[in-house]
Image (cartoon, rainbow, N blue to C red; front, top):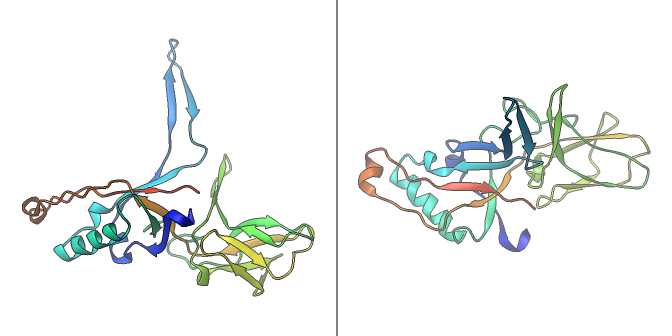
Length: 209
C-alpha cells in the first residue's frame, strides 16, 4: 500500500461532517417456496463515505479541491478519520490499555496486529487496524499496562520489547484512521447550485491492504 498511499489525513475539520459508514455485499435469492437464501459475498465490510456533505463554504470547497489535487484524484490513498468510529472504545470514551484483545503470548512472538472486535453474543468480527494514531496507543499484558513497545503507524503492528509469557493476554487501546482514496477522478462544481445549497458528490472508499 505504501507506494500508492500518502500518510496524510483528510482535513479533520471537514471529516466531522462527512456522511457514510460500513458497506457489505450480500446476495439474496428468493426461493419458490417463499423462503430466501442469503450469501455473504464479502467477509469484511468496506467503509464508504461522501465528502461532499462536509462542504459548507467556498473555503471548504477550496481546501478539499487542493487535497484532491495533491492526491492525484484516485491515484493515492490517504488517512481519514471516521467521525463515529475512530477509537478502540466508544466515541465518548478515552482509549484504555485494556480495550481490545490483540493476541495471546507464546513466549516467543513479540509482534501483534492491532485489531478491533465488533459483535455480541450471537456473532463477532475482528477488524485489522492498519492506520493507528501512534502516540495514542496503549498496551497491557495480563492486565498490566506496559511501556516497552513500539507501533508501526503504517501497518498497525505492535512490537513489544520482550515476548509476553505463554498464555498471557495482550490488549491495546488506541485511536485510528481509515485508509481511503477518492472514488472519482473528476469534481464537478457549479457555483450557482453550490450557493443554493446543492453540493457535489465526492465519494471516498476504503482501501484494503
